[in-house]
Length: 158
Image (cartoon, rainbow, N blue to C red; front, top):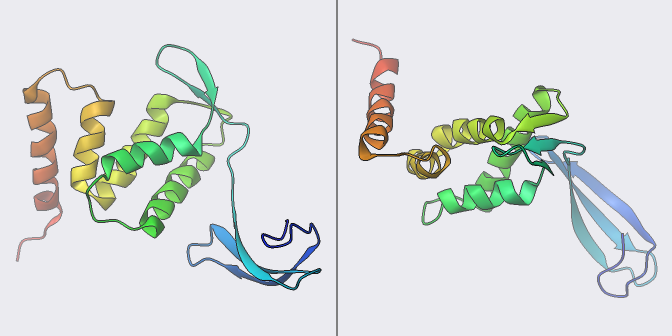
């Protein structure tokens, strides 16, 4: 890791701390030349995952594409960068649980919708309307009805 001040390549780790979700490590570093201290964030990365698109094309998995889709859905909604990181980590953890080197875009979309539904129902509707390519208002209306009915099903009668 290069020092951001003097560009020296010799830095040492002074302290390491695991994040609360256990998905990344914050490291405090010090430059051996100028003694400048800075922090880095080490995250787990999904490697060797191929995504099969609807048209049959194959692409390498891209965290950036996942984040862009989430950000578009969460536009003008109340969320923090920490919330976004946590959603991404949950989706990637679900991907890893599948233990496959190849997933369809549909599989990833379903995982994303599951996390959005739990986090923000408006963002979930936004994503679902684009992802599922609703042909008409009736299909959209059915999705809304299922969301409205879902909390009622979980409540216990007194």
